[in-house]
Image (cartoon, rainbow, N blue to C red):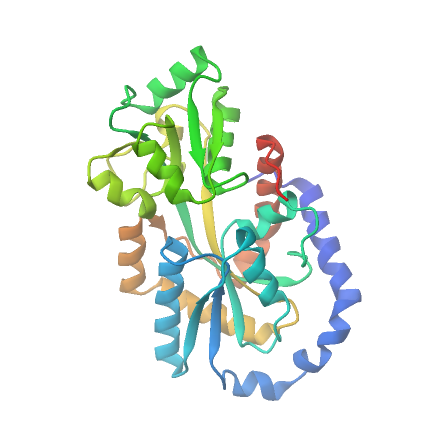
Length: 336
């Protein structure tokens, strides 16, 4: 993450400064209204996800919606508006009214799409402001149980001796599964054949079937196949072992010192939303992160409950953005 450097931070600040000089004019009426802040929320609030249901992000978002809705006594609706690797739903939030009625709950595609897609209908830096990081997702390096590889060391040693002979699957170019494997190739000095699929579930199915040799997946996605004895877990992608998989080593520990890959789950708001509303939502999400239900959910899903409030997450965003930009460049991924 320290690859951000001064360039990434300056680029982010320039983008935010450009909005401050231009886009802010259209938001003055909203931002300057004390009545809005004092009465909010007065209408149903939507937590919009630009991906389909059934993911770790979906589960955490729904828990947050229920707890905050119950606490505030308002209806909070979770909407899944998938399409174009998250672009469809993200654009909808960028075009929404900045009145606190819609928040974006999303993953790393919020950053990667900027470097994968030539003409986005929004600007992730200019059109959104951070609210909070709600969790980080370690992935697991998996092989079919029929694989001769029992450890990550064995897989990497074979790949080094046989460049291009092994294949790995992913949910598409620029997906977390692709980028985690590209980072492994870069850090371990190996080369494997990338086999992209339209959806992660199909990519995992073909690992189980032996059509491809290995891959990365979120534990929540791979758990069923693992419990059915169809997958072998070799390592996790975090710098340390997962609380959910204490017996599975990290890649950094097992074979590739310094390797670390997390797929973040985070909340963003329309850039013209009043800061007071953003802060109140950040505080509410912080309350969720301290709950017993959140601890149980993150443990069961195999994700890390490393919550960061609006101040901490805002400070981390430039480095986060640069991390994904560098990784896209390393992977050679191309979008549309």
